[in-house]
Image: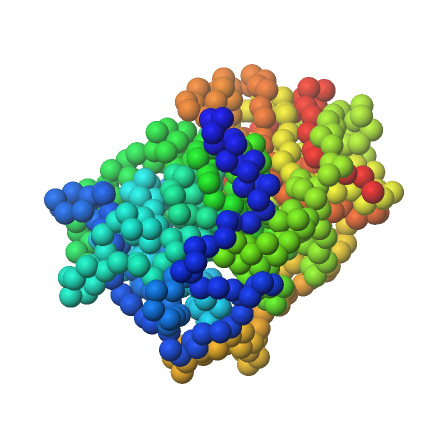
Length: 612
């Protein structure tokens, strides 16, 4: 980061909130914006914005379909913008996943991969109902190749980023807009200050746009979002699927959101994407490198309110750790909410507090109101369902990296009594849950290391890794590490929505009443929980950019990165580390019978822990 950028970051942090808006902007109350505009009177507009790219190669610049809802202000009054982009507004197509999951495993049966069509339920329409009366415009845009936009979807490619950045440019007078009749459409009503927000892909696009450093983007709120696409569809050199979507890849997702008119214009783009994603090796290449936004964190000018569910195995929590660390390195103003939810929004189950926080966040960064939010603790973490704690930073202060030898010499993790074998046999027909379920006892499909029962709670906060010396005899190249909390507790088991109870959070109109089903956690008492997991392909032992053949029976030193996590192991529980090969819900499946032998004398778990 340049010295100028460093100075800007320091000054932003010192100023705490955005600078005051120009005199022509809507004037909020000193303590915050209030509902002063009628939602029913809001101005609703549709237009397209021209981009500088021609991703479908038809000789015409791609155009983004944009919908605007803004308060009916006095003439000359300008308002800031909350912008939610999405490839999902026109729905999803039913595209079959790749059928290459079972690579000689002889077990094609198993739980079917979910269809992507249920993604659309994630995106509630509360933004316009809540924020337009408070003096904000709310903008929705179809990502390139979807809905009313032209161009082609590319699963995080640069053209998608440029498409959504062009909307920011239009809001700041730097890009051309056109009304449905072709006449020019300007955003003279906008202050230019924009906040982007969204869940999942909708939240990934804000990460991507922020990483360009575009002027006018003041803040982003990425929820359950991707920061590095390689770590969404790959891990450790292997093809590793998001939970529940085995066989999906970047090309499948692009086909699923290709809802534009004349989709055949994108045939060549999708074919090129399919080739370049390299599903054969799972290695990093230029395709994936370009979709790693963490590399560009030094460009970020916007503040970041990062939100993620600690039980999200779709967009895994590993998308949080590197992105958060990179933002910290570049002194980006930021806060984090970590919930006990899965692939969901805090609007689902902490609705009132979420709206209060989001309101104050946007007031701070889009209206320049110093409401104190940036002087409050940086991190809010739901350590168990319904129990929230705040911390000055994250990972939580007091956490130390602990090296726990697996040979028991450190006294923390050791083979349980009666487990003499140092090897296990891969069984791709069994799930990770079935392999960890027995707390103590021999199981030929795993190698287990356990702590004693904890005398006091132990908190895991951040990113861990496991260094393992192992040798493989057989077809499977995977080593999977599972961090397990052994101990009965009441734990998150899903989100349930009431069929009858509604919360009306803001004014509405008959076709958009501003009311939403109440939701709550579904809880279950369980004897264990897989807290984190990680994968490595032994063929990528020297790096992720190229694989190297495996010599059967030769020991190799491997590092398995664990997914980012924040979890409290309760007093009386055990910390468990379980090693397996195939992770049935995530990895490819090879022929059963691979024997993995571990030399625990040269194997260590490195875990970020805080005791007490």
